[in-house]
Image (tube, rainbow, N blue to C red):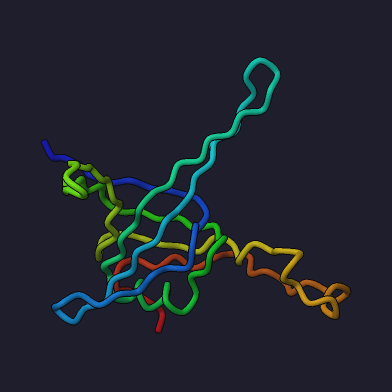
Length: 145
């Protein structure tokens, strides 16, 4: 018998990935991904958004996130759950993170969400570029470049 610690999240990046360097010299990325549930209760629409803390350790994926990860993108993240306990201001707190190591996966499923307030006026009539039919999925350090 064996155990499996694996989680998959599909949601939107809540902010641009933050790339940092550990004391060992290796880079890692931290991101937040939002998943939203919508339903109707007593005829009224209800919405609940959960935020997920993601830490990417796989160096190839960190490079991809640094170059291409942007707030608002729809992404798929696959990794393992890790629980931690820490103290802040004398209060014990608990956190759950998704850790994406060399066995994890990350895929950008859509381009950055369009925001009408940031689009230049002269581009309003320009045709939209064709989207690729499939999005690449990278696994661990196995990246295409």
